[in-house]
Length: 450
Image 1 (cartoon, rainbow, N blue to C red):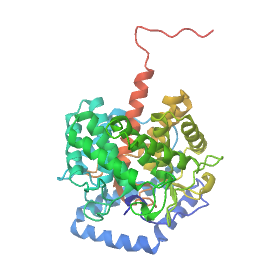
Image 2 (cartoon, one colour):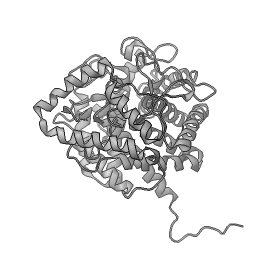
Image 3 (cartoon, helix red, strand yellow):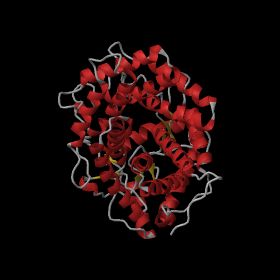
Image 4 (cartoon, rainbow, N blue to C red):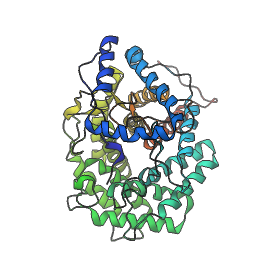
């Protein structure tokens, strides 16, 4: 599987505090000490500017903006102040980015690069954007979201192999079967089936689920052919989540193939990698740091699977890890973009996708536990993400979520990424849902405290 999310970029230097002098040193090191791999990629992608020199101005504007933020605003960038942008306005803008990223074939582009423009359609993200589109359609009463979801679903159906799998990578680049991508796409197929009641979509989802069960190892993990780097990864809990959702839809069709049981086998395996400190092992990406994006993947998959399968042990494990990250965020108003063991880090950039995912995790934990501290942290995170969202710049930029902040840093540099938009939209949709549930009807009054 060619994983777009973990391509190498510039190393991040450590040992920097909030002072302007040392911030400038950090920026200089990030800009002037790139790895050979980053240099080669930068030279290749920079050729895109020769074909479209109009991208030079937006590139210069964003680099300058983030450079100045690093020098002057870093100590205050994550202060808990409410932006002047409402969550509804920002949500509409993010969905507008997704609409613009949908290609003629119906797939969603993987990213918009400031150097090369839109990528080809990305089957994996196209799959798990489908639930976001349907959620937004119901919230905003927007028929465009339903139409976009239906186009995306039809395109995905055309990509499925006879065995039931879906390919990894950008469309046309790597057509081999991928466990993780099949699981992510399965989420979209399950939701599309619930919304449309279309038999061929259900058949496709069942075929994908059957293939995932066949590929699962006896210990509950996925490794070997179809797994990234042929290794087992705890962030494949997202695949377990998709199977748990499928089980509620289709176990009655195939009683011998219990998708729920397969999901629980994986969750049992993943839970064995949770440490007493809250740290999670087994992410297992050779040659790459433990990006927050993948840590949050583990937490999301285990939490949602735990909720669906009524597994209090899974929910409690996620709650412990999520609380460690919440305390780090509350203490420093910042979450690093990558971590080493026991949530130690030397990184000074932030992974905006991982931040959005943690907002989702904290909000879901509030919904299952009633602990308002989780919702409070999520609101602060959403405000920070809103502050960093570009309001203008044209298609591909306005409403886009960059891979890293600053934009030139290690995770998906110089790109606005579709999965970042998906998770930020999810975070804002959860915020709307919870906020509405907390509103007090006008005909009711709270009792006085005594």
